View (cartoon, protein in one colour):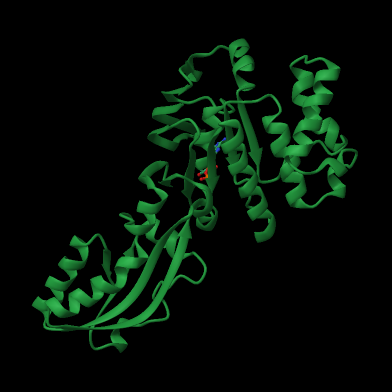
Length: 334
Ligand code: ADP
């Protein structure tokens, strides 16, 4: 559905060229929710702004449903933009317009008949469950309600893709959950494809099918959300995962306080954990002490974390570590 190839975006800053997006390529399938996560300044927004050509790419190619977005002239681009909806952290609603007028706006621009606009807006209000706010102004609504209206406005023209630039970042956890549920409903019922930019790993884990991690303008790692959590390859990814609340990241544990070796295990299937550790103790001359553990539900599947202390001869510990890895457990020495 969305294909980004060798995307580069450079900005002229004073007398030098700054490369904000550096040779980024990725593909998003229809009906997929694709997350782009990274620290502030990593280049996430610029990638997304190139997709709807709010920024002109310096080089590279972007195709959406077979249409080469990068090659469109201004007139063609206007037509194509109705296929790309976007929501923002700050909602960007028109403050002087009511909820009805905000949602109707993109349809009016397209020249849709008044009666048809009314029908579509009513349908969308029902979809976002805000029928009672039809005549309210943005200032009379909560952040979560404003974002629901912004989503209705973004999907009013039935776009093929929806881009979310930190769409949940200004919301409290309860409203964030509501928005995540709404976005999932949009994918399920309308077959939409979504790209979500976020710096919140807890949001990405609850909604994305796949995640790309960006740093310094590059994608440094990309994987399904389950695999990314289970076996992060890059330090930055690991630090994002460790920002998740309550996760045993080991910060509270000082390896020097322990006689044995501390391992942080990540495993996919909760049911296998016990017997793998059990087998490990039986097979090798090691003792295991469980220090902390947690299960994280990631997009409806579970990933477990365990911090263990392992005692024994170095060679036995090495063999036990290898055994765990062979059983598809990600093992990190702390
Ligand atoms: P993110 O969304 O990951 O926070 P951005 O894509 O907004 O990152 O920005 C990436 C880098 O590009 C930042 O260093 C930012 O300052 C720079 N940048 C973004 N837009 C411009 C611009 N119009 N002019 C110059 N630099 C820019």
